[in-house]
Length: 69
Image (cartoon, rainbow, N blue to C red; front, side, top):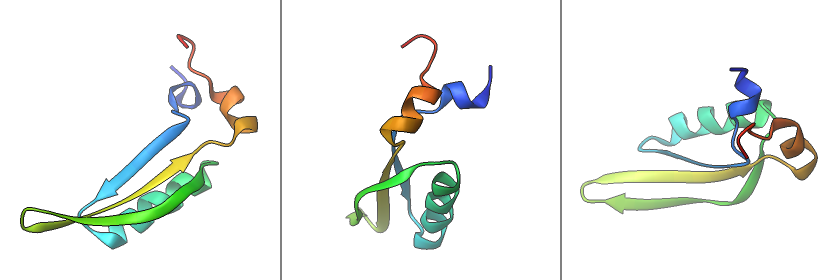
């Protein structure tokens, strides 16, 4: 199956490492996603968790609609 047909319109990217999250968000932006809201940071037990939501814009989402949707 083509990679472009598997893409979701909304992703919540998470990581215990800010640098790793920045890399993953940068990759998503390169693939056509846009930032959605502000980044978040929280503590889970003894570790930090950072997150950023990204979305495919409406004009791109139609091109990447999953075949079963």
